[in-house]
Image (cartoon, rainbow, N blue to C red; front, side):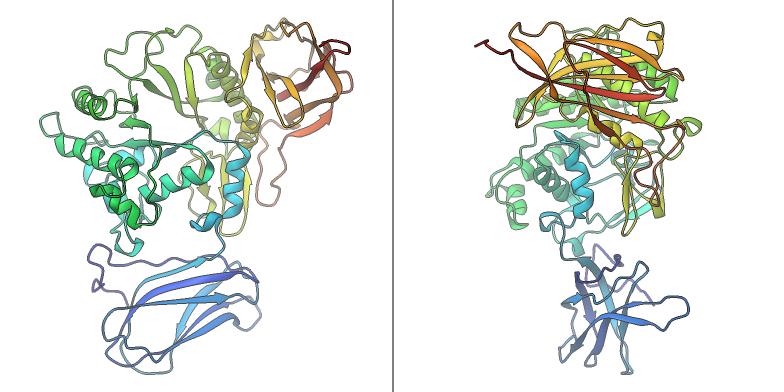
Length: 535
């Protein structure tokens, strides 16, 4: 049975479970209370059809005084693998036993901070430059009472009250809280971008005369991240194990709130206070400025792009005529999300998104940052389609939209080159070009999206390079993302159904003839070298 008699006044009921794999250690933490002595066995067990219950690991809990709430910690080493394992707590002693905050987590996580290594490695493969957190609508809530409150997501996890995410209709224990997001950004080598509540939810809000507590809450959050270890909130961070401050320099005031009743007046309260206290912080506004004056001061403005595949493809030119003065653009959410086009993440959606990114890349003088959303989904509890990375308790795969982003992972800090396409099919093509370096070579990378059903012949001319530069055929390569069925997806059973294929480019030269597959994303990486005899 369960009852609200926990020793944690902020958190009354909790339980976590994980997939069990042979040879791996699992940390069990729980709180126990009983007026009698305890004789318990904690076991990882597996029940399979047509077989007896298998014991994968076990450890005794004996001879301890639990008359008051007592924290018990054990490590269980699995002697077998089971995808549907369970944690059993058994006793042959009669009596009343209270359990609270039962947590079972693998001991081997990314940098010891609780994240699955294989999922973090997928993120690292994208070479991310920033991490936007804790979300979008999750920050607002349908009602302010259910908005994300950073102060309730720090400190010992068993003391966190959790909250109901009423936009997506699930309860979160906030074990992944403000501190963990900052730590994740650090572990990934990225800059943190904090989206905070502007005193506004989907259905209610406060005006500028009542927003001061929200402003102070943000200042406390900045002190937690940036303050010295002896400051009020910086000391809390230090107590959690991180005396060094976090480089939090980007904040977004609200999420998709521009047209909400109190946003404009609340925004100025936050902006003015932030700029006075933290002039180095880059402030992101929810109000777009792609076609005119923003009307409010900002360093960046937020743009969310969700639509069907054709519309997203055509948005490759969305920022071509954006004023080059004023705030920069942050495309903080983009994806093809029309169900008939996107499915659960297919090639068609990824190609439209790739076309959009070529447009963002060619407009990188005004577009400063961009990120796909959502990043992850648990296949056992999908709330949105599509997503970049799909996982369950033991498997994972990248959707075509994930693999598409690998074509752009060298773009940050690269040199942009102009691209001109001359073709009878130019309306279905999108392209961008950069020069970038790996550990051995410099490359001219030309990315071309063919969003049509016809193969296209093209000639790529490497013009505008230094006169002393030539193309190294042997080191050049071709990468293609395509498939015979444009609606095809990846899955747990076939995770590499739609993935990039890398080939040599034997005809690479200053003038390269190429054939674009129908519905494809192609990257031509022309290796560059000094011409013989030129110094």
